[in-house]
Image 1 (cartoon, rainbow, N blue to C red):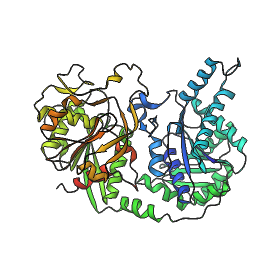
Image 2 (cartoon, rainbow, N blue to C red):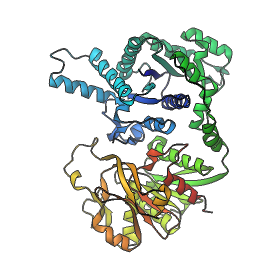
Image 3 (tube, rainbow, N blue to C red):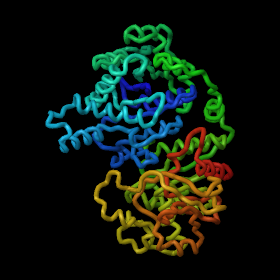
Image 4 (cartoon, helix red, strand yellow):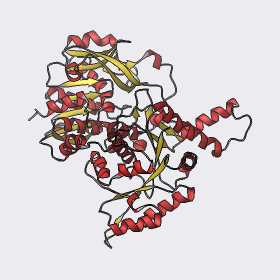
Length: 533
């Protein structure tokens, strides 16, 4: 039977529950345990697929085509767990399931209520993951902050689960904040006390407190927190601010968090070497020998979480090349008029990520042209690949009317167009080409050299595709089609041969990158960028 760790948060949002859950997963894996992690989000959207990035940040995609919370990206980057649509549970998904069952008559005429029907459905979803994944430990992160109305059904569900499972089968780790008040020079424990008090009112007694803090916690403060929050002194764990998120497992290790969790769950697992992570990831992050500056051109650039996996994958590639990656964030709308040279001063690579909608598109195309004409390494992902095709068609093939039908429905030369089956679709949610699809690579191309194999599997999230009607005219002018979906002959990767490194892929390689296993395309992109003086 799997054991459970429920991770909750209090005081304020954005304390890093997702990073904490992922780091705990990493530590438990180093002790030889198999782990999976679930994110429970209290919003009423069925999934984040239709949400604006400014509302939610990036949408992370799993192999089975689920559009999920970005925290699943953290879970995959830190651990070796396999994550599916079942690892992201939203209030919308829960209510949709319960109402569907009610309409079918599954409840046999009973009055359908929050308790027990909604809470039972939440528990069913959590238990389903534990059963299907066959793991030692299931970590369940509850989104939001204790005290939020929308989180209450999830908290009640885990309260019932803890009661049902009994001692040593489920624990609660509460992430909280110890603010430092500069004017009086004191670190305050009262917000943590109040947060734990709210949790205990619900019926949940935390076993461990992860205390986010800018300054070390004194022994006196630990004892005070333990006394007023009814936890063991060893259960008050310091979670200091760190420069890089991949230092968090090391920080928790120093606090013996893994041993404490195993003790409370009554699991015996021997200490194992944590040195590989420390030496390869943490040391290279702290003391890189080289440096590269990469421009990321997007329209949601003001929100860091909108391109979270892109930034992380660039960082992983930096680790692989023993280099610090400086990211210059360029708003594509700023590139639509006037000279653009100043935006790319001292830049060694240009990356255009995925996206939707016409805003800022011409600015991205100008950035792509600048990179191509100035022999600056270029990496286009999803929309970035499509726009590289448009730019090549316009400026190399002379097709001045080239465009995507996403931006110009009646484009004269629709080099990027909607697939036939997409024309009949009206719903927005979960209707794109989603999840992992095979791709066959052409031998001795840049992409094949990077992967060192000819058949790959990568994740997608898009509606529009390369228009095969323009394949011959584009390749005759030097565009290389180096990757194709073998099942449907869909173009997946394009390259420009007479260029230092110019590559666009329809899939999202950033979703498969890890700090200790950097994605080969990001790795090679940065390796070439480091040669630019």
